[in-house]
Image 1 (cartoon, helix red, strand yellow):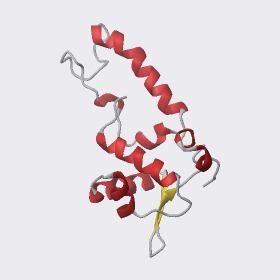
Image 2 (cartoon, one colour):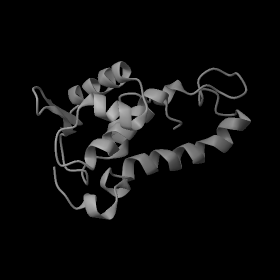
Image 3 (tube, helix red, strand yellow):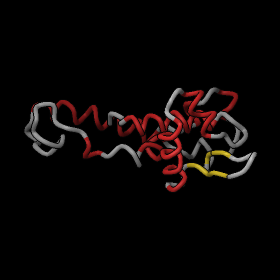
Image 4 (cartoon, one colour):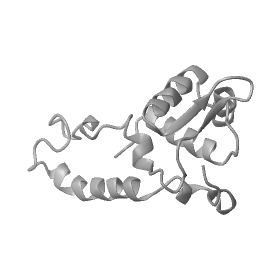
Length: 137
């Protein structure tokens, strides 16, 4: 699964949020990650609706993980933005995988399976520095 830009922003933002012991404001995240604030705000709110993040309003408000980082898989973070049917065949046969005899498909399928397994088996905690991965949310 090659990540669309929105999925990449979502993953980077979730990892950034996970290292903080407080709600993190969208302006801070956007500045630290060098991503457009308005676009990131919409992305973060989609993650709230998906149950990945929690948000609070007010002066001490911001975004936090909605669950412990050791229970939050990368697949859960990016699934809202990365659809399996979104890949196009390199040879122009439409959506990848629709023509099983395609020579690209036969070579790509094992790679795609490994990537899918990586996103499903890897948690946010797995990607955090050792000191911050022990904290619970």
